Image (cartoon, rainbow, N blue to C red; front, side):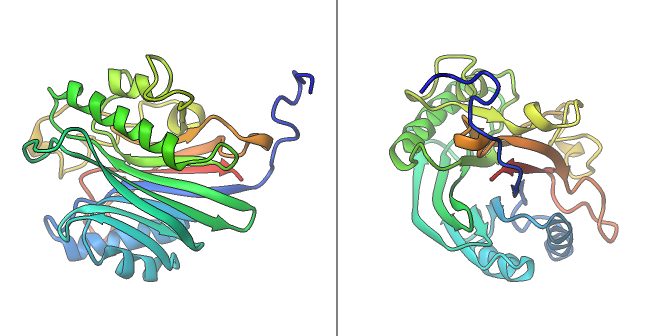
Length: 269
């Protein structure tokens, strides 16, 4: 078929799905008050799919029920893991450690895959977290290569692939550049759009912000380290971001819900 410069993906899909990604900070601090804030923020956002990093073991049931996201998957420890919450049934659930085993606490990465059976076809949702230490870019590069291999193994090329999570790395870091095709890609044919870059409001979009009182004791600069990534658009532009915003930037009942701000994206679907 000849390439159509006006419609390279065919007629663009006009409908969207809503995807949220948020590091919810486990049960640290006043977690019951924070949990109420998380529920309130996500209820207002009304995502169809949500990836929660540093989720506690029963968060999929408690938060999913409150948010009308009854289908869920979880990987990690009871204290901290990755949860995928979905409005639609999930199949093909699988998780994998990222990077070499035996690293000290905070160095290990984790990813979780699930295929959501949405009303207009499947959506392949992936949650991920990489090691957090500022000086460990080399380990995050190893982890993101493992993530790319996992995506190539698990995801098909027909349905949208969306990755959400806490990558603990700035957009200009080598590990994120690999993920978005600005450096040697993590696996053949695996390249993603950064939803904030494509459809954000043009600001830096810091998800670790000194405006958040929970971050101030750490003395880090403002950083955008939490992401929603979507794979190269499918036919009709499926998966392409059309809007991206931050979540949880304001106190709820006097309490900021997490030490990270979340990310919310509308994707063609």
